[in-house]
Length: 374
Image (tube, rainbow, N blue to C red; front, top):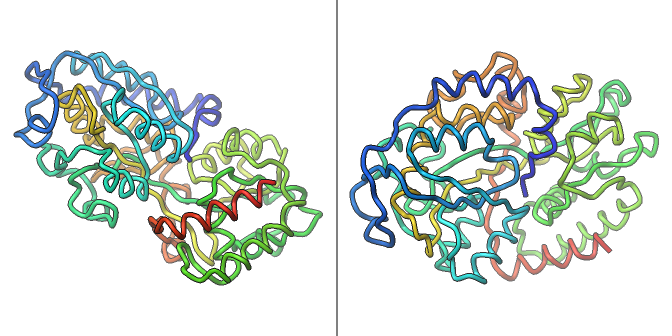
């Protein structure tokens, strides 16, 4: 779902800021060697690992090289990072291997819940980690893992709309999903995320419904809307979003907030809109695979990332607010002023947390998305 790679390559100024904070962030190192794996290490008392190796499976752009180097220097652990491009790809990979091959995974909210039910995540209890105290209260009891027994928050963001105010007037701006899907042809073609959850949720909201609706008629209305919208689509892709919007290839589009931030840094005339008929809020998390071979190192990594100073370069590079207490205070002033990072009180009222639908409802989502892509 989240791909920050393209935007990150353009953000030289952000990379510089990230490097400046690493000297501060390289703290809370491990104090003992540990290679114990399995449920005993997961549920036992926390003991930081110094040494060994760790394999992380995450979203593209979520682990800057500077952070990898800082972590390895601080803990003495060799960190290997591979990336996936969707929650469904992550899930399929873990199901095919029985959860082996990786130690730390980074699923989104609804996928955490799904992977718990499928027995793909190891129970380790985030509250047992020293730095768990740093998690903002709003992230301590999520619907998908009420007691944070299987996950810890990593990054949060929003799915909204970006438009170029130098080409589209405020009066004609897409301030809702309903208006997004009915933009005049003079606005040009739209950038649309290649993501069935985002597209279906947006179409449901535009037609007066909500995510995970149990009424089949709601999906028919959404499908009719998307069929009519097809000829207005310029690019259906979740990659290179910031680049296309910043270059003017598309004048408006659906975007994740961190892509929006990167695009706005390059082109200030771009505006990020929280749709009035519902803005998705998502949380990407750190979890431990049920087949992890390096559990002590995995817990040490998660604890290390729950230090706001250690996580700061990730937030700065990605253009995201912090899930940790005091984290937002460390952000550069320019980021604090961006509504992609700090929503206004009115924008906060539009937020809808991503939810996990039933298997039957997921089938509706899949069918609607496949019809739209044809």
